[in-house]
Amino acid sequence: MVLAWRMCSVRLWRLFLSLLLGLNAGSTADWPAEEEGKEAWDYVTVRKDAHMFWWLYYATNPCKNFSELPLVMWLQGGPGGSSTGFGNFEEIGPLDTQLKPRNTTWLQWASLLFVDNPVGTGFSYVNTTDAYAKDLATVASDMMVLLKSFFDRHKEFQTVPFYIFSESYGGKMAAGISLELYKAIQQGAIRCNFSGVALGDSWISPIDSVLSWGPYLYSMSLLDDKGLAEVSGIAEQVLKAIDKGLYKEATQLWGKAEVVIEKNTDGVNFYNILTKSTPSPAMGSGLEFLRSPLVRLCQRHVRHLQGDALSQLMNGPIRKKLKIIPEDCSWGGQASYVFLSMEEDFMKPVISIVDELLEAGVNVTVYNGQLDLIVDTMGQEAWLRRLKWPQLSKFNQLKWKALHTNPKSSETSAFVKSYENLSFYWILRAGHMVPSDQGEMALKMMRLVTEQE
Image 1 (cartoon, rainbow, N blue to C red):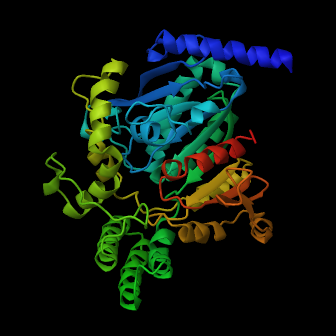
Image 2: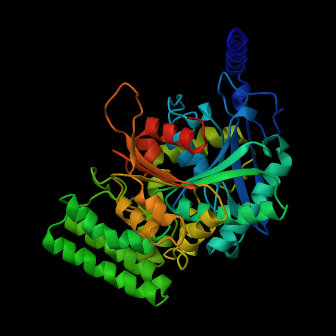
Image 3: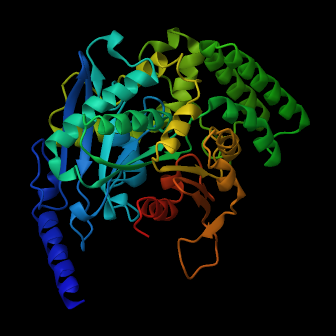
């Protein structure tokens, strides 16, 4: 016990010295494996004219070396939302948008890898418009190039447990990426200790979300009978389009369904039903003249991930810190095109991919915020019930158990159910961005998923 305390004290002192001397500034060079509290970042050219940006933070637990803790990769939604920006400074990174320390940063218990994907997101960029990803297959194959480069370069992480955590459309991408990563590891193409994927408020089955919007809002007293009928009617139109394989039309109808909801709920916020939506800012990129329904969707579901304060931070102090960003590449500048390029793929489900992951033995965690509308918990439960995983009936028979962030408090923070390699977390009092709304519970969940509690 005395030896452990002394080792912890030494690490605390080393961490203090590194902060005092400004050694956390980061660089494009690899940091020595024995150093803690370090950062690294770089670009990987994943295809011709397609360049993906990543940013790594080494874990800073004062009592453990980073090699004793897992590596977590965070994937944002949109598509077009930036992990290095929103996920980092608004949710789980070491600093907030005011560059002040975050008490609930995941960096206490894991090294963090933020990746701006698909290409064109955040600081990632393309040289030609035909280099944008148009489907999940391209998104996944691009990530395989990046992960191979990353683990080849950072061999100190090849044996560290590696988890993919995600949010919103990032969950759909995470599912596809996880399956391809599992295959690449089996084939010996990538060396890493892939240990599981967590799908947060994820766009796994878009139609299940859309069909549940009306009943969910009605149950929360945000729709009356007439409003419920209108929302259910447009949801049925989306279902018919998907059943016919008309995915572009389904995406357009999805946008119309959101307009119907806004009109009937006096502007409910799709990301937290207890708040109200704010008007979408103008997109000053000329895109307002192109496919206006999709542009409005982009304004709602991508622009909120790059608000003025975050954009100023990323294109100001952070851009200056990173130093390697091309002069003509502004953070978030290509996000609208990323969203528009995925139009046909947007409403396609990936339930079958989750089934493949489960049957392959990959640990899959699903988690959802109680107050989320865009990917409400009812919709998540609906697609989960349609899994073909042989153990699903046993999972369904289990009763969930309550979780508390404070052992001394009787207040329930979440519920969880787990069987073999499938877990589901119901996060209370959280909207779409679970770590932003319930930081302590999100951190506790991450530790449970990565087997640290």
